[in-house]
Image (cartoon, rainbow, N blue to C red; front, side, top):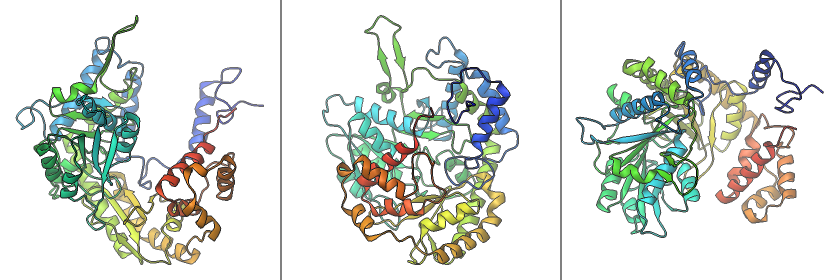
Amino acid sequence: MTDTAGVGALPAQGMPAADVLGEIRALRDADRPTHGGRLFAYVYDPGVAGLDELAQAAYAQSAHVNGLDPTAFPSLLAMENALVGAAARLLGGGPGTGAPDVVGSVTSGGTESLLLAVKAARDARPDLTEPRIVAPASAHAAFAKAAHYLRVALDTVPVDPVTLRPDVAAVAAAIRPETVLVVASAPSYAHGVVDPVAEIAAVAEAAGVRCHVDACFGGWALPWLRRLGAPVPPFDFAVPGVTSISVDLHKYAYAPKGVSVLLHRDPALRAPQFFAYADWPGYTMVNPVIASTRSGGPIAAAYATLRHLGEDGYLRLAAATRDAVAGLADAIRAADGLRLMAEPETTVVCFTSDDPGLDLFVLVDELTARGWHTQPQLTYADLPASVHLTVTAAVAPRVAEFGPALAEAVAAARAAGPVVLPPELLALAGSLTPEALTPDLVAGLAGGLGLAADAGAPERMAVVNTLLDAAPARLRERLLAEFVGLLQRPAW
């Protein structure tokens, strides 16, 4: 048998480089397209010629540099400091501002930035045995992950089903003596709306609690949209009471993954973020972030991207994104049976349907079949199921094609009709507890949904999404974990 990457990564005899690269190219053929403006989630494409090659070259130059020890590799320290300075300056900090002492760290992504923001807030209050954080229900799920990992209680505040924002009075009421951090999003991922940051920061400051602004998703784009005349509300270090901000450079700064920046208003606020350990016979460990060894590749690639694009480049990209958002929103308004969840104000278009004859999950599959890859979002509390579009600059040239494709997909979804699950399966989804799931039951459900371990993910997901949508949140979590576990098996 010929050993390939699909069978095992370690052949008995080494393979020529060209063959290995050919295998990777063949595997990549099954992936969603990362460029071309047709994938509305997961990737951020500026559509700038030559940028990929520049970032790849910069990555290669620093791929083997180790961020563990900045004294050994001062080039990486210099680039990290430059990225932090650029992010701080863009987000209302630095010399000549009301937050002149902003400091920060470069992390591997938004989840790590949020984990560290929670850790810093928790460790700043060693007197509390049961620390808590307050976050809107629309805050990124990484806060729940941070709370789980760090054993911090998470108190969520509902969002208004019309404004999609939390009520400030409800945020204030949720703050307890044990609260160490209050969260706001700028913007929220699901719907792309900016929370009332100034008001939330004010109630946090009045309670003596840190306030973190999660600007990971679209925070890099907001200042440029504001310069273009968009009515972006205050959200950064210009707002009193904002103590930390996270912003991902691998999103709207268009750097390769994974690079994020976590900023603190001053060094004292950042100090509890660090981990240091000397009580062993090896080197004294000092880590500002979660990882110890870190490749310099992503940092160098981000540095090259920012230097190459510059302020003028980001302004042009923001303008293209703004225009693309407007065009997509018009296409949604013109589509029969669809409505916007909110008037777009950042880089997101999110829509739903009140028409029982139009199944959004079937519509997503029909768009996928036409080459448009969107992200379905399940029903939550008073919020209906919806479809999320993350819009980048590369989408702008494709906007004129999207409207007709959407109309065709809507017609096809109507013709196909809504997914109808067997009554017994619906009853099971509504009554089954996560603890009651057995391996045999999971395998049976997965097989019936086309999620067999050796089949990969199915091309059409409407049936899977319909089942998940019918299940309570805790059961959804367990089912998804089990389904993904079936897909992630060793290639022997």
